[in-house]
Length: 198
Image 1 (cartoon, rainbow, N blue to C red):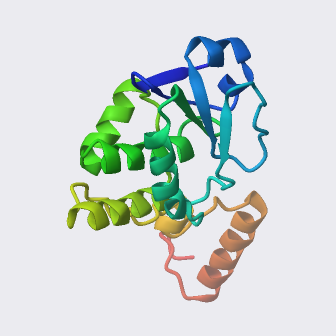
Image 2: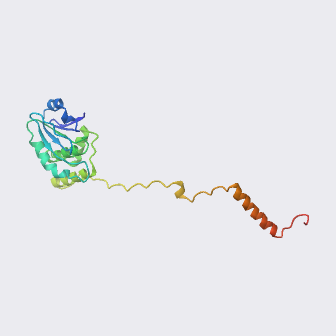
Image 3: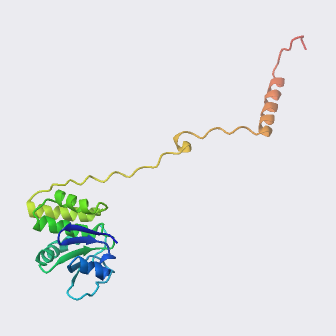
């Protein structure tokens, strides 16, 4: 169970951490942001759960929740906030990055570095990157991150058979004998001079 501390009161994790009541209590968590489709929100006294039912697909509209989640994290004055998804690698980090941009006044580049310092295995999907770029542009009027164009698909290397014509197969002994017989027959039918005047 891996819980990453982003700020003194903001934590990021996968789906297992919120199920550990002792951990939630020890960290002073009073708000859990659940960014999954299937994981249930645990019910603990004094702990609120905010659901963001979204899949981890590039086509999922996580950006539609950036403002609402950032506002709720910012307004949680009673304790800490734990933002989680299934693995803590894509959805929940994207929500935390959006919060940092909006309420901590940092760029997307800085917010991503901040989160990755605490949780090195963060891997946002391409769709969430695009939505964070839109969010940054809306907040600051420009982008500080450039997303590289996707690489063209790699073509598999050509096999030796497709690079050049196939090698000639050795002749079978039967074909070689027949070929030799034909050559001899042709040679006999022609006038051939033999030494000794046959």
